[in-house]
Image (cartoon, rainbow, N blue to C red; front, side, top):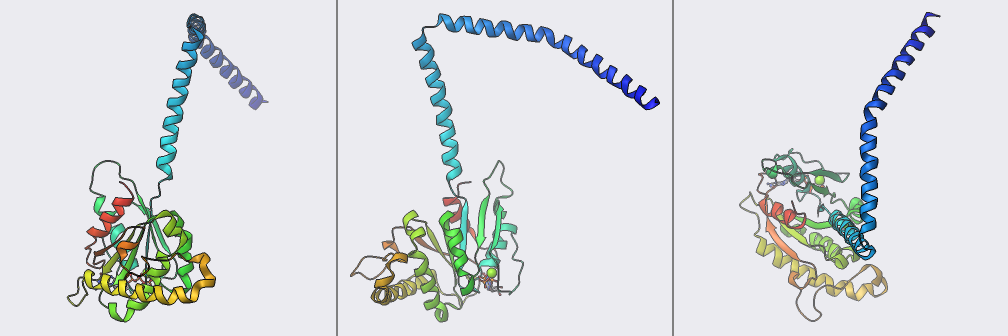
Length: 280
Ligand SMILES: Nc1nc2c(ncn2[C@@H]2O[C@H](COP(=O)(O)OP(=O)(O)OP(=O)(O)O)[C@@H](O)[C@H]2O)c(=O)[nH]1
Ligand SMILES: [Mg+2]
């Protein structure tokens, strides 16, 4: 019984409080109605054409800003790290994210993904746009995963082991050839950066040497593939200029070469490429 009494009392108090608020709001309500009436009256005084054009301008401005916003959002922030197994993608991924290499020699079995501001930018002031970085393992069984990420990529970082380059040259070139002829890459002209990694070692090959060797290898592949893949045109675009030795500069998308050492944190050229295509 006591409980109900207490409730009743509480309810009564809430009601009083509510009444009090209502009274306080009354002058505001009056003011608002007055303004509204004034507004309506004023709008009656304006010639309708002027009113319509003002409304049209307002609508246009709103649509314009909405459009700009949408357009900005549509720009991708995804950078895909790819290349043969052991080339150093995962080390590079952590170096870009944390500024340390998380040294380990395990072969990745899953793509590594992250949305972050590059470690080298964390000391910068102001709001910086994060990058969606994806490290797709080089193991042949996981390569189809690449197709999931390529359509949304703003750029592709193709990592090459500059130390063990010669034994891997053919396989790396084949993988790169496959990427460069993918419809998703060609149509959107996704830029590619070939990163000659592990340049901390003196025996590493130079980027000029690697570029030339890979161009030669792609040239050979172009000849052999075009003779066998007549029936399989769907997947393939032809590379380069027919009758001329292949050069990466013949590609419709921009293909450039850089040097890096993920292990020791020399990654400035990769960061520059990322920021060229995912504006801060
Ligand atoms: N000297 C040197 N070694 C490196 C460098 N980057 C990576 N490595 C070594 O290369 C090996 C492979 O590196 P990972 O980053 O695991 O290679 P990955 O490309 O992710 O390989 P998968 O995951 O199999 O596709 C590791 O033993 C690294 O320590 C580098 O810049 N310099
Ligand atoms: Mg890995």
